[in-house]
Image (tube, rainbow, N blue to C red; front, side, top):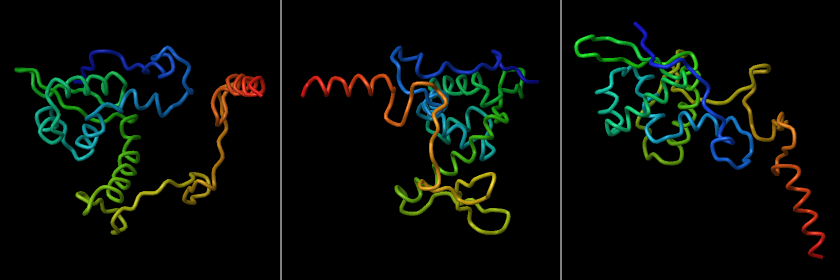
Length: 181
């Protein structure tokens, strides 16, 4: 029985949360859901097949009150679903939704970065079905080639923004520099 307490909703975009006008950004919006301490570790445990609160708490080291808050956020955002497995007392399991499953490659790439830059020895190695140790890479869905910085360009879909920031501010900054001369 699925007992999510609230209907799934999209989190508020980061730009409205701060009251300022930062760059509209899906990365910032995603971090509002998974960027708090322990959130990605909860997902790691779920991907390992650990679904119950006590085991997630033990394996992440998260304090119980913090873990409760992180799980609620992930459920409310539609990343995890909460399912009753015992009625007396009421106990729940947490499983990744399709949206949560889409975060698996993100964790694999983060693991690759940590293995390369922080670990003396990788603590976990994933094996691909081909038999090789997994070396995750970002590839283009259309051509299948690995993506490198030199291969991509950016297009801003929100009017008034460029690589440098808001276009109006760039102009004001340039005018201010002209006045200073």
